[in-house]
Image (cartoon, rainbow over all chains, first blue to last red; front, side):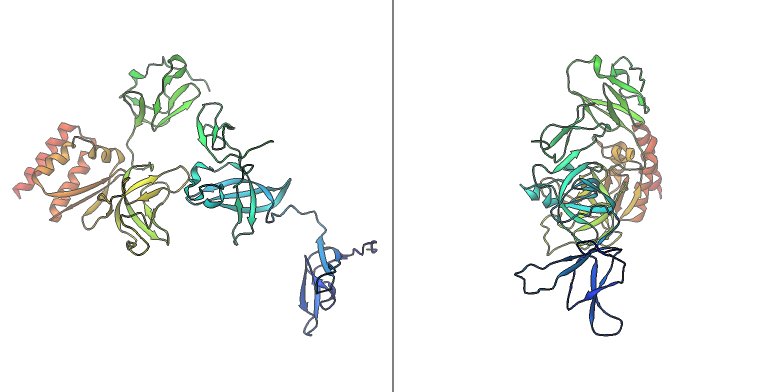
Length: 202
Length: 243
C-alpha cells in the first residue's frame, strides 16, 4: 500500500516494525529477540495500520511508540471508568453478575461479564445492602466499570444517583415504572418491588 | 385471557379442593379492603386465581392461601428444617434442604460464633436449622440461631434415625394441639423427635426398637384422620407391650 502522509502502512502479525533500541512497543506490538540472535526487535501482533506516536518532550525515554490499530471495525471493549449498560444474570448473597451489553453508546461484539459487589451497589450504608432488594435477574442496569477485575469478570459499580436499574420487569411480566430511588411499581397489578433505581433525566 | 369470574364470594371455595385456573376472588366486585395472599395464589389484574392444587384456607381477617402436600420442599423464610451438610467452604457450609438449590449456612451463624470456634461439620451431618432468606433464584440462607440470637435447639443432631415424609405430614406433626399419633406414643414410649418443614423427621430413643416403632407409626399416619391415628397408634403400642 502506498504510504499516506502520516506514514500509515498495512502490517501483518509477525512483521518487524523496527529495532527495540529505536522504538517502543505500543498497542498491537511486542518486543522479542529476532530468531536466535540477542538483538530485540519490535514485531506486530495484529493485522492493521501502523501508527507512530512521538514521545512527550519531557520523558527520559525519547523513543517514539509504534502501535498497530486493527483494520477490522471491532466492537467496544470496557475500560476502567466507562459507563456500561448490562443485564443482570444472577443475584447472590454478596454479589450480582451481569452481562455487559453496551459500552458508552456502542454495543459490544463479544460477551463480557461484570460483577457488582455488595459494597459497590450504593454509596451510603454499604454493609447493610440486601442484593435481592437492589437487583433481580433480568434487570437492565447502568453501571460504571471500576477496574478490569479478575480473570472472570469486570468489577462494576452503581454507587451514584444516575447509576442503577434502568428498566425491569415485574413478576407479572410488565415493565415497571420507577416511583422512587428504591422502588418500582408494576402498572398492571400495582405491586411495588424494590430495586436500586437510576435517576434518569435532568 | 378469558376468565369467567365466579361470583366473587370466596366462602364457597374455602376448605375445598381447588385446582390451578380456578378464580376464587373477583376484586372488582369487592369493596375497599386489604387482602393478604399466601402461597399458591396469584393476582391477574382483578381476579385472584389459583396456581397450585390443594385446599384453600382462610384465616381471619383477610388471609387466603392454598395448602398442599408434596414431597418437594419450596424454601420459605422462617421455616425450621432438617438439612444435611454437603460441603464446607471458607465462609459457608453448603446444606441440602430438599429444595431446588443447595442452601448456605454462614460459618458464624451460631450462638457465640466467632472465627475461632467454627463448628466442624463433616459432609453428611444432619442439622436442624432455620431458613433466614429464601428469594427465588438465589440460594437460601440458613442460620443456627433464632431471631433473638439464642441457639434454641438448632444445631447438629446426633444418633437417632432420619426419614423423609411429605410436607403435609410434617405440618401436621408440628400443629398444635399435638397431633394424636405423637400424643398417644408419647404417653407410653420415651423418645425425642425433630420435625423439619422440608419433609424430614428425626427420631431418637434409648433402644432401636422404640425408634422403629415411632418411625413406622408416623409414616403410617399420613392419610389417616385424627381418630384413625389414635386407634392405629394404640394398636401398635399394644403389640409392642406384648413382646
